Image 1 (cartoon, rainbow, N blue to C red):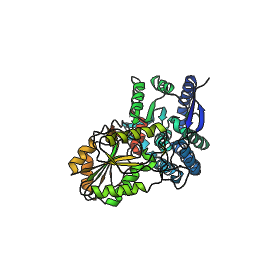
Image 2 (cartoon, rainbow, N blue to C red; image 1 turned 45 degrees about the vertical axis):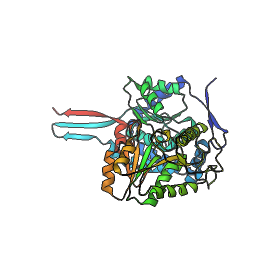
Image 3 (spheres, rainbow, N blue to C red; image 1 turned 90 degrees about the horizontal axis):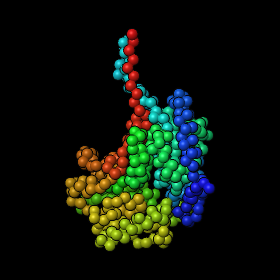
Image 4 (tube, rainbow, N blue to C red; image 1 turned 180 degrees about the vertical axis):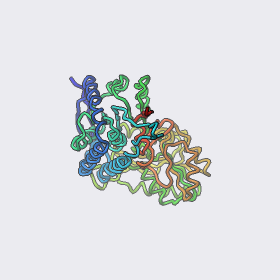
Length: 458
């Protein structure tokens, strides 16, 4: 009997859907079809590939309500936020707009005697392993430039958001992308690893946990298949003495609590100059108390359940440990908190880096706030983390923000904003956040390989 995966909805604990897991033989057959289809796909004019991707984006744009409702049932995001189409559209249209630039050959010489250049050619079969927290946008980050570059794509969605892969496949196929060029697959861990270790694919993009990223790299060991990883973070914000306090509170707290804190670049640590610390905490508590925790299908809900009970347990355990070590919790349990997936958003003070909540990824609606005396102390604490995805500096001094940013061990530095992915800038990280280059012109470089031409006329 074929293996099956059940998607448990965080809304009410019911089985939202069941899907059959592809067998090993069927998965390898799918990879073979993708490889066979790649040359013809790459031979099409780039403009044709780009137009199909943009048409698929337009199709998704007409189905925003469906996207929002299905995400609510699958991973708990409130419908009031309209799914993920705004981000999908921004990233898709931008990457399509720079495709010609991103894929243009680098011409070194074009004379009567020589033509020397470096072309960017597709890897072949790109394997995208997407997470559940932003399942459309994280997948699109790679799918769009991969297809436009002439690669074929196989997508494995997380078990918590299986409908997302189906929805993307439906839109892309309706837009004219051949079925073997983009395939949505339901796979188990063993088959996923085998596809990599036996070189059935040519490039792997993985977004998920550090442990999951290590599994991907072990599977690829010795194959020389490129593995791009984005493994989350423990992203800090630093509020300097000259910051706009209200703007810092509103934006940082939204960055900490949006999507029930289930964001790779969500704010999980805040360091505030001691002159603003008390006022910041007071305003942050008032901001958080105003949130409505509840059913994500209710348009009045600000924060829904976490995607799974076990994710909420990790956050509760971190909060309990911190309180046992002396941390102060400022938010009283909300009526909708059920001790399971529905979790009260929490602010902790009197915290230290001895606590897990300030060191290990929480991936939930909790944030620790610490006072600091100056920039040096803030930088030291911000860098005191095994992760390095993004960091924000809140100040009206742009030169100082850049100077501090130069000292931070992170992939992205923000001034006076956070929890945002700019498609024109490279999305990358360092340390345990992984390695890779997503979006921007560097995204096209990552999804192609250089091929040199040295042509001499005799």
